[in-house]
Amino acid sequence: MALLDRTIVKLLPAVPRPVVQRLSSRYIAGPSVDDALRVLADLNAAGKLATVDVLGEEISNADEARAIAGQYHDVLARIDEEGLDANVSVKLTALGLELDHALCAEILENVVSDAAARGSFVRIDMEDSSTTERTLHLYRSLRADGHTNVGVVLQAYLRRTYDDLEGLDNVRLCKGIYVEPASIAYRDFHEVRANYVRCLERLVEQGSYVGIATHDEYLIDEALRVVQGLSPDRYEFQMLLGVRPDRGDQLVADGHRLRVYVPYGSHWYEYSLRRLQENPKIAGYIAADTVGRVLHF
Image (cartoon, helix red, strand yellow):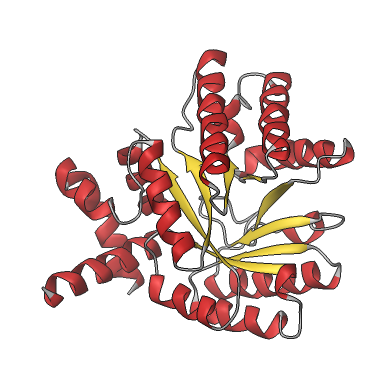
């Protein structure tokens, strides 16, 4: 199956753009904030929470970073106005991290403060390993300044992650999708799984709130074991929009909180190709789902 997933990914650039758009429509809300809000309302109606990501990490100047931040302020306002159960997830490179650390810190704090005023929450996404230390520094600085409505993401495939968990209050734990050298990242599938479980156990033991972000059935089962007996307000499961929705429905039916990651924006094509190229397993999920729908009709 892994070989098939990688083959699908290699063929993606040759697939006509309209076809990619049709295939990705289930996994990206659309180009506008109205598209995202429509999806959020549907998710809430199904008993699911959501987090919104504005697509467009590639920025080259401060004006572009502020423009993306402006979209987040708009999203937070619309979520508040419409009474939706959703928050936002930000990538620091989109907010100027590679341009100017101080600029990024300023923009990020403004978004977090806006969210706090609206009773909302901001999740700081983790990107490739070159940003890990700076991302954790900004997260810890915000928490030290009294911003309790902010969390961070850690990636189980990085060897440093278990040690990074110390003192973190709110973490989304995922496997990780960026290609990293073996000197800093586990490359073996089973090693990544094992470290994910080890990190999850530590987060629960130290009393952190944890977002269990995975579509891997083995890890879902292990997570259910680890959180057994915990209050439902101590954790949540997290999945990508359109990926394994039936499993998500079952988690909700069993009484677990489930948050769905909802990306939207004009950069849908770049996001689609990059996401699938970085994580061939997701390409396999989507291809299997698409074939299933075609056969169904």
